[in-house]
Length: 266
Ligand code: DGL
Image (cartoon, rainbow, N blue to C red):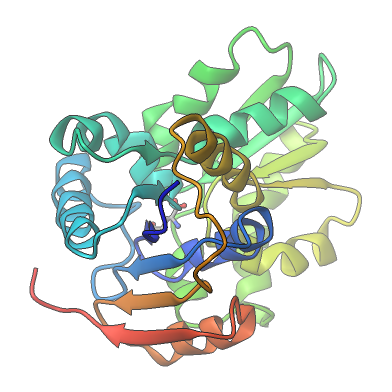
């Protein structure tokens, strides 16, 4: 049993899309979220830069006395999970790639044509094809680097967003006869409606909904679940408190008791 909070981070507001599933799987837990809104997007940066930024955030979360860190970011999970585990051996880290790949393995039939969309870094890491080798699905990948800046700008549900979706997906979906699309970036659930408006027959798998199961399993395995004697209290930190980040927090309204704070100083 451990009543300390769970740390969660992402390059920006995208990781907030993981919170509803985490809250429902872990009703007694408190969360400390960090969004690096001042330096987003990570997905087009060099892996060495992503490792440096992620290490700074993990150190900050450790200073907040977290008992575990959930990486609510495909880009960071695909490039830094091992280096973070090496650098912070006392902290359990849960990444988002394994649970998202598991969701594909468990819900797709052999021969199904699955598209993976994500940032440049996630796609270049080839981590999904590696994890899904032997699963029987036909996998195609596409980097969609303009999605995250538009989403951070709050431009979901606009003509420019739908034009960008068509720019990346029209040819990709048609050429590969994609049946199921894995949103392998935690920002992308915010444009699910834009995608489905254009391709209504597509089945969407949302990586943000998959991490909660692994976080719970790891807490149980390590006997770190909160015991329910302390009411959950969440904290949301951002390196730049953008209006859109605040709007998103209000949109997901994860708990009745939370505070929002600015953290700068990396
Ligand atoms: N939300 C992050 C992910 O899941 C990516 C955002 C970025 O490019 O910074 O990959």
